[in-house]
Each structure stands twice: as structure tokens, then as C-alpha cells.
Image 1: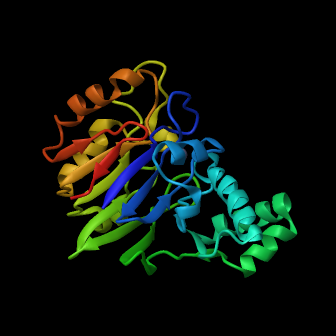
Image 2: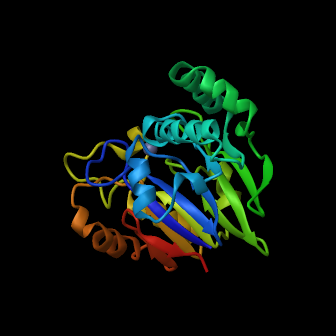
Length: 267
Ligand SMILES: [Zn+2]
């Protein structure tokens, strides 16, 4: 299995795309979040994927930097289903509020075409806190991350043999969810910046972590591989170096700070 980061930035970055990524298990694809817009299509193309091949999508929450790209995908799916060139069902998973927003917005934007497709292959699927589903042959457990801002879900995927791949969304993992993160083979966690220098917002107020916070947490939870994302973009050329140096002071496992379009083999 491999993971490609389509974007690694927070909501209003300009040097990166917003955080979203694709899991590729021998050609079976699972897209997590969609970024803020049309750039998703070019990111997919540059990563070597076609929207046609993505049939499983998860949206973590309603913020524009995670949600709005899905409407570009839906636009493509509508034309694919309409022309008959897309045959296989497309499943979009999210909690109830996000599913409702997608449904209402897509109806306003695309009208009858959308309504027809939801009866013929485009499935909006509500997931609940703690719900398990088998997707692409893996058991996914979706969970409420108890975000301070809006309702947000993450998930824990069984990679096989009980090895956990845990996506924590874009707020710090709360203590009530440590069970999902603990002993993960792979943990994906947000980190806004290395420290909180002048000019940076108060991280607690905006519901984000510094690199050291995420790394301390991963150390405590005995995570084997930690991927940091959803960052600021003030010094993009040096981000990997600076974040890695900072993070390894607090974390003894394998720390990755991927760039947009970087692929990580999940061994
Ligand atoms: Zn975000």
C-alpha cells in the first residue's frame, strides 16, 4: 500500500494545496478529503491518477479547505455517469452534517443531474462515531475526533493483521481518542508550525499543534511512523528539514514531513 499526499497545507496556504491524500492499495484507491477546489484535479493528474479511478472518498469535516474539492469530483462523476463512461459506483463517506451539506449544495449546483446520479451510482453514505465499514478490503473505523471547532471525524484503518493506520483529521488528537492512535503503525497528525513565533496565531486558539506537540503525543502513544501535515507555508523550501529536526527531539520513531505529491510506501 502507498500513500500520496495531494496537498499538505492548512486552509489559506498559497505554496501548497490544502491537505488531502490518496491511499493506493494495489490500484484500489481511497481519497481522504479533497482540498478547497479545482486544483484537486491537477494534483490527481500530476500524481498519476484519474478521477475516474476514485470510487471511495472520505470527507472529514465541512471546512472549505477539506470539502470544496468534492464538488469538482461530483461534476466529473455526473458527466461520466451521464455519458455512460463511468459504470462503477462512487461512495462518499462523511458524518451526517457533511453529507447533508454535500447533498444540498450539489442539488443547488447540479440540479436534476445530481438527483439522477444519486439513484444510479453516486452514493452519499453517512458514517457514525465508532462505525466500522469494509472498504477496499480493509476495516475502517470512523470516529468523532471531538474537535473544538466543527464536528469532525477521523478513521482508523486496519492495514492487515491488526496494524493500524490512523488519520486524526486537522485538530490535535484528544485524550478520549488516544485508543485509536495508540500503537498505530502509521499516524497522520496535523502540525501547524515548528514553534509559535511572532506573527503566528495562538495555536490553542485556532485548534492546532506545534510539531513538538504532535511528536510528543506520537511518542507517548508508541506510534511507529508519524506523518505531519496541514502546515503553514512561510518557508516551504525548508519545511521538511526544520520540522524533522524539531520533531526528532521529541519523537524516536520514523518521522515524515511530506511535500505535496510525495508518495510514501506504507510498509
Ligand atoms: Zn483544515
